[in-house]
Structure formats: C-alpha cells, structure tokens
Image (tube, rainbow, N blue to C red; front, side, top):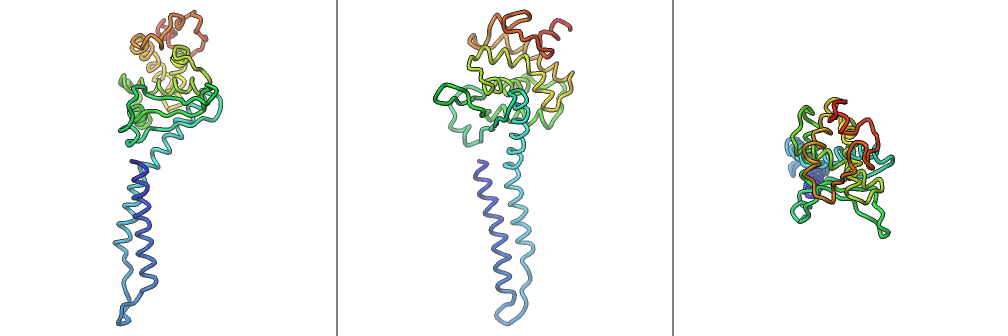
Amino acid sequence: MTSLLTVASAGCALGAAGLAVRWTSRRADALGRPRAFPAWSSLVLVIAAGALLYPGVQRHLEEKRLARAAAELVGGHVTVHCQTTAGALVDAGSELGYVPYDENGIPLKTTTLKRDPCRLLHSYLSGDRNHPSEDVTIAVHVLTHEAMHMRGETSEASAECQAVQRDEATAVLLGATVVQARDLAHAYWTGVYPRMPDDYRSADCAPGGAMDEHLPTAPWLSAQGQ
C-alpha cells in the first residue's frame, strides 16, 4: 500500500511539474494574451503529493527509531521493517515478527515486525506511556525478542528469557521513563510470559535460574519488590 501511495504521490508531483512546464512554453494564447499561471491546480497537486507521501515518510522514520532502539540491545547496526498492508494481506503466519537466517543458520541483522505490532508501537511512540494495554506491552516485547535473535540467539526460549530481562531497557529507549518502563516489563513477565507456548518458556528463566543474567532491569526484581 505504501509503495502505491508513493507512486501516486510521484504522479501528482509530476502533474504539477507538467503544468508548470506547459505554462512556461505557452505563456500566451493564440491572440497573444498572457495566460495566468495555473496556481490553484498546481497547489492542489502539490498538496495531494505531500499527503500521499506522508504515510511512507512516517513509516520510514518510525522504522529508523525502532532500529536505533534494537541496535542498542544488539550492540551494532540493525534494520527494522514494518510489514505493509499489502504484505499483511498475503501473510498466513501467526508470528508477530521474524528474523531471517542465512544459509549457515545464522540470524541476520534485520527483522520484520508484523503490521499489528508496528501499529501498536506507533501508538506507544506517539501516545501516553502510562499503563499501556497488554497488546501494546506485547508489541514492545516483540521488538526486544527479535533483537535477541538479531544478536545471534536461535533458541526461542533463550531469546524470550533474554528479552524479558531487557524489556525495561527497550521501553526507555522508546521514550518511557524508568518507572513506566519497569511497569511494562513487570506486566509482561507476570501477565504474558506464563501464557507463552512451551517452547518459549523455561523453568530456568527465573531469579537465580540458569538463564538469570542478573541484570538490573530483570522483571523479577520488581516482582520481588526490589
């Protein structure tokens, strides 16, 4: 959809340019009278071009912002793509995001987030970060989870546990205060993680467990009242 809007925007811009070129070459009519510049027609086309281009520009800027946050977690440059409307229409997968692997089974430094998580991340970036809905909380976590894959983790359970310990950091990178971010991470850990499929959970993902990285952002610290 975004590419179609970009094409339409280009068409409007070319139309405005065409009007200007035509007027330049024919400033007078057959009787020698000066022709008025088609200001209104040109203005309408220019405004239409800008309006059609805006969604694509906004999406690009948000992808850059999400990529900057993920890059901090990964420790290097990454790319984040938001699924387009056209892509969503032909997508039959249930996952909320994915990272492609190369021919050697190594995760690439790029991820595609599905349309709904990206839409919810847009609301998180541009709205009130106090008491986000569960869906928004999950969307923030999806970005963290995919960052763990881009960092090289291939196990879903390990990536999930690494992510729950960094959701607070992700939320801060997306503009939340420390308190807002901690609440979001705690909400995911206590409300969503226990309901995840078996291959995403591990008994070792717990305070003092084998997967505990002893990070200050671990959600079980706030769960224990620390």
